[in-house]
Length: 229
Figure 1 (cartoon, helix red, strand yellow):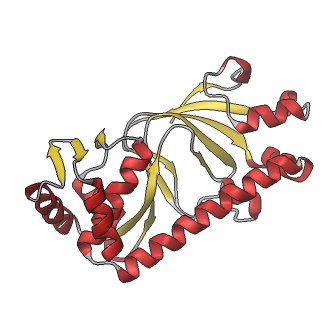
Figure 2 (cartoon, helix red, strand yellow; figure 1 turned 120 degrees about the horizontal axis):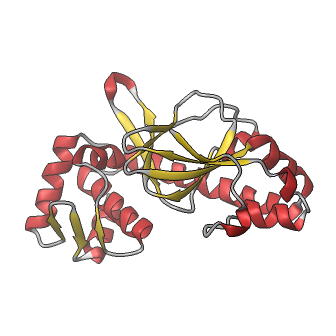
Figure 3 (cartoon, one colour; figure 1 turned 30 degrees about the vertical axis):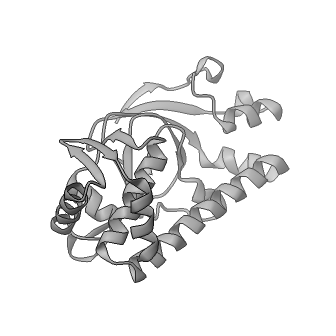
């Protein structure tokens, strides 16, 4: 990790976040202590069970969020992209990160103290409602993930994961930052099975895959496969 600026002027930041706008409305900008940092590719941004002292706002780059499992098998919760904020669960009393976050590319972040967010949460009803909605959305996604892992077959899990990536990238064409093993962790299957299923989808004309370039040629077919379980 390399500190870029200990105290960046939020007014000049291109990626103005909800924290900035709310603190400005409440007249708390002078109390908003933040630091911009850069993480290199493969560097750990947050470690499972470490104390969450900061909310981490991703300004640039991509990272993966995953839970460390038994026997070296991990489960990826999702892909982290610019605009995502990590560590918000600490506002609700979960003082330690329940997951790992590792950089897939070089990542530029802004760190804001959790104590400041708790102050805003207790002060501003609108901010509290938005944070509650974001937390509820995250919990819902985890519940959907659990159902998928428990009830869906390999092909359905991979189809669901590819549709998720298309949603994150906001396009059916994207360049993967995830390895095949990462895709397996995202789908809750082994890396070998991930390669096999991707090969099947490619041969069936459902996806296009050339190196890291991915295209969902028949996204509706992927939805049918995912929904069939």
